[in-house]
Structure formats: C-alpha cells, structure tokens
Length: 217
Image (cartoon, one colour):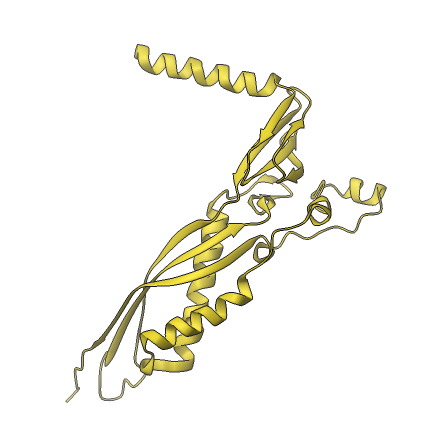
C-alpha cells in the first residue's frame, strides 16, 4: 500500500472510531439525522440541535433534506396512427425536477439499510414519467410546449407535501419495532415512499417535436 493511501486509511479509521466513541452529534440546518441502535433505526429528527447517543451502541446518519434536482431525460412517444404511417410524430421531452426528502426513513426497511438515495431518485423518476405519460395520453400528438408546461404545473401540486412537524416525526420513533409499539400502545406508522418525498417543481428543459412521415405502400 502506498504511503498516501495508508495515511488516508488510518485517517478514516480514526474518524470512524472517533464518531463511535463521541456521545453527541450535531444536526446541521437543512439536514435530518437518523439515530441507529445496533444498526437499527430508532428515531429521526430534523431540528438543528446537538443530540445525545450511547457510545459504540448508537450511531447517527445524516440525510440532506434540502432541495435536490434530478434530470429526467428523453421521454419520447410516437403517434398512434400506425395503419399507413410509421412513426408519424416523435416528441422528446426532457425535464428537471425539484424535490425534497421529508422523511429519511424511506432508505430503510424492517431489515435495515435498503436502497439509500436510489430510493429517492427511482421514485421521483418513475413519478415524473407517469405524470408525463398521463398528459401524453390526454393530448396525444397535438401536445404543445405551452400545454405541457401548464399541465405539469397543475399536476405537480398533487405531489407537493409540507415538511413533517415534531409530533408527526415522533410518530415514526422505533419504526420497525413492534414491541415498542405494543408497549406504548402506538399505532404502527407505515412508511410509504410517496409520503416521504415532496416534488415541488417540474421544469421543461427540452421539447423537441418532429414530424417524420414514412408512408407504407
């Protein structure tokens, strides 16, 4: 191992060890902090504050809850009249999506760490594709830029959610522990992907409408 790589490795080990023995962790503004006990999520908070933990037993994981942006590319479709013309219209739509994580427990399930940030981007991408597909089915090849833009502004309102308040966040304490729920008579709070992500804006970055007729003989 090269001296530089060895040095980085030692620094990483020391940082990891220091994080485990420290009894406190700070949650910066704009972030959420997940407290894990023996690797299992037991609660999360988003208030900028210094939180206590048991050294070695508890660890914290920070999740960026600020606005994020995702480029959804090349959503194309063709006209449906295929009897005499092949590919009569081809429209390519690219959009930029603004979204936020409002419940970071989406990256976990009852077995522990799940998909990480792939859970966010996969949901956002699939949701936007579905929204655009619905608009396409409604307007067909007559779809224009202005119509699409207005429809996206209307549709995105159905996917915009407010940040959770303190009481709503505490309802997710010990999310995967049935014993805790039964002991304190707390109704289990189901973690649904659609309730963990807020999509606030969909901006068209490319709208390319081509007419390419090829008539069959």
